[in-house]
Length: 372
Image (cartoon, rainbow, N blue to C red):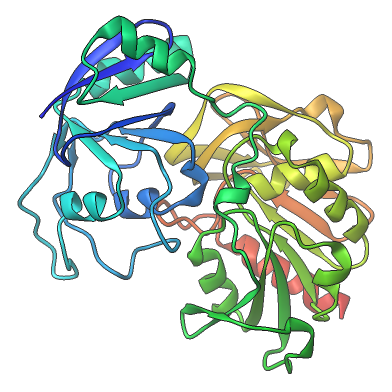
């Protein structure tokens, strides 16, 4: 089905919808991962965005039930060069087309993804509209221009859990009164769900940690009522500056328990410490971002997905930058020098991506153990 793709700056592309008729808008970003499209599709951090894959062949290993990172698909659209109808993988339980249709996500192929990616790199991330119904370029460009975008939007409210739950036997289990739960593990982590990925909970579980997950609106006393050994702030979508209440809650937790943040959690911790954030030109999305650990001098290849960054000039004197991105020198990690709190902008839980930074979960586990 013929599809028109329009950017807010007036540039248009053509493609084919392999998921049927539809129309959608969002901020377009490109992802450089060669595999892991199912993990990308189920990453809540992509809420409000249309994802373009730079690797040309997508769909060739199908989908399965083990590689999901949340309870659904959250992105606004999916653009690829060539959709592979025939899949082959012993783990596969279905095809990508049916998976997208089931969750109401438009899938578009036969797109010149190389030209689109180059355009975004030069001009910056921008709003996009996709349609099989409106094939008039001027009309669709206007729809792109009038779509909401990401700046100033609280998208976390659309992806965070509504009620607390516990991670048990590799799945979420609803609970009524977290503070009354008997502790069954050596360590308990209170998780602020800003749009988390399940693999974060899996890695905590692998280290003997019991995870109780709360909505992002949970206040400090609610989080502390379950008597956790540490507080974890997850990744998530949208503009961190649109979450002032969450940052204030984290500020009230500083020094009371060890704190670890990932991606949006890193930005929220930075805001709580007094820093500010800003929008990147085209963001970091993919599984091959080089990050330097300033303490060891080692370079990690990391999985990333974010469109905002922490302004290093606004960090207070008692906060140390621990990691930097070698592509653009942006802040990739911080730690407080006086209290147990640290965070990273990238995704040490990978899914998809390299496993180089998984040691950060060990670091947080050790921090909690030393603090008990």
